[in-house]
Image (cartoon, rainbow, N blue to C red; front, side, top):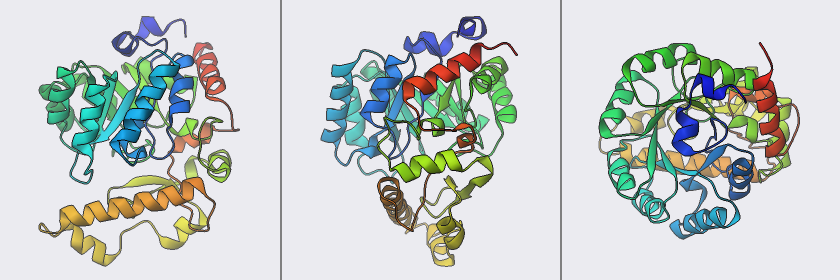
Length: 325
C-alpha cells in the first residue's frame, strides 16, 4: 500500500500499524487467533467483550494475544444498560492497557474518562453528525462512521452521504465502517477523506474463524442482495443473511414485543431479554448447523469467493489497493 501515506496518515500513525485497516469486532466470530493473524499481517482488529462469558475469560484472551504478538488491538464494549458486565469489562481493558476500545450502543462518557486515565484510546461508533459531535466533545480519539452497508447494527446513511457530512463537522480521525470488501473499496474511502476502514464480513470466512463451515460457506454462496435487516435479534436493526429460516420467521418484532419496547417501565428489561435471546440464537447458528439458522453478515460478503487465511485476505486487499485505477 505504497501511497497510503499520501492520502492519510491518521489511523496508521494513531495506532502504529502498517495498513489503515481495523478487522471489525464481530459478535461470536472474532477470536484471539484472528487478532494475532491480523497483527502479523500489518492491520489491527478488535474483539467484542461479549464474546467472553466472564471478565476473567476476557482478561485471559487479552493476555494470550499479547503473549503471541506485539501490536495494537482493541476490545468492543456495549456501553448501554443491556450489557450488565460493562463496568467490569471496562476495568479489565484499562488494567490490561489494551490499545483502544470501540464503544457501541450507548454514551461513551465514562469509558472515555476511565480509558484515558489508563492511556487507552477510545473510538466511538456513530451513525450521524449529532452523535459524532457529542463524542468528540467528550474526548473520543476517533469516530467509526457506521453506514447503512455495515454488518450487524448498521446506520441509516450511505458512506457517500455520511463521510462528507461528518468531515465537515468533526475534526478527529474518521474510520469508515460498512460495505468495503476490496482494496479498491478501501481506496475509495480514503480518497473520500476517511483515515481508515473497519471491515468485518470479509473475515468471517477465514480459516482462523471458529464458526461453523456452514456459516463460512454461506458467506461464499450468498451475496449483497441476500442481506436483510431484522429487529428480532436485539430490538435494534441488525443485518443478517436471508436464509430460508429468516424468510420464514420474518424480520419484524411481533406486536407484543413492540408494545413492551414502548413501555417506559419495562423497556430496559425487555431490551435486555430480547438482546440475550437474540444473541443465543446467533450463537446456536454460528457454531452448529440447525434449521433455525440466523447468520449475521453485511453486504460485503459479495466479495467473498472462498475460505482463505487472514494473511491471504489482507494480501489480496493490499494487492488490489495498489493496482492503478
